[in-house]
Length: 278
Length: 287
Image (cartoon, rainbow over all chains, first blue to last red):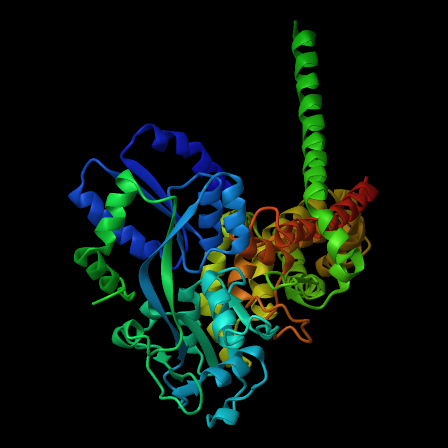
């Protein structure tokens, strides 16, 4: 609420000067877009770009209400949201700016190192409750998830739990711990051999082990690496989007040209995301 | 002139008092305006007694019973921990401690209330949570119990300072009378002072509970946030406050989920209103 009001208050300030813009949205993308913005401002000294988080939904909402120039989103815009935008005379324009592989992680002490999408769905919906059902130790599985309205949470539910089936009604087990950030999940995984969680590839460190994932029992098990995500082999990866009002113009356009350039895509790798192309 | 000044100040105070009542009413009206619409779609009973909280699914399942029980359980745990320690601390400060230690203790307790809850939450997350996991051999340390311990820290300053005031306001003659009748110091405290101050101490406890049930940041960080109906203190829970805080950021304004969060606000408002009224009743009984 406060952030929104500050944003509304600041908006006229930014609108007054032509070389500044406001980018808002996905918390997953904040660091990446911030790096882009810093590099861009190093090259173009007169321009000013403000990047704030708040979540994909917040970003799209403020694009619709006209309080930001670019909404960053880790999920596709919903039809409902497009309708709302059109009512206000805004035509959202979608661009893929990077990819993100979603890693499923466990503690390195856990012997389980490969799973199928179906097994993952069974774990996260609570059908498989003990690691021994997956040839692991006799230990209750602790499910870690992001908050219900994080784009990552929604993506994981739709593409893993429901396996892209829109009619499916599967939900995360009520016993899943909802943690407020990817870092919180990383910390809990690092100290808890019974836990399993998921987050963007960038958060993997030596304290966590990424699980190799297969589409089904007959497919190959693929580890989340940059190459596997670009090639489309790794089954749980997603595009990261920018939404603008209509076709990008002025500073918005020159910023987007910059991030799609090879220099911009290098920054993607530096911030542990996956470039659109190599 | 002096009278004139006085009357102006008096009126200012009345205006301030009325304004605060006015604001509370406005807040309540706003909550009702935003939150009541959810009862049309979800139904009041289904909302309060529903066991499933999946606010962004289609169709959304909006049942907050796990959240209410989660809040009450964490609060209950915090009260069980903080009340005996808090009251004992107040007795020690008011009756036993030599004056130097008394001042030091008072300052420390007040300092405790100045620590931002997010800091306590963070400290809890990195120290308390792993301990609890190891000591009790739990699958995870993010439990209602961890939340209770951290909240007990937050309720303590309120309980100590108000209970201590209550003990001070017991007329000295009571204690002197007890001692004159041959009671030991401990007997005088236990049999005379505490019962005489009981309504003030109860009010202290109620205000402590009020502080605890509204706390958000620390509970969000260390209770694990799982919307299940807990069967013990050693399970993850999700509280009403943490739900609002965690989900407010990304709800689409005007959606059913958004209104449901306001409806949770109404429930919280009612709970803290009841607690405050109860505390007030006890405080007034004393006078």
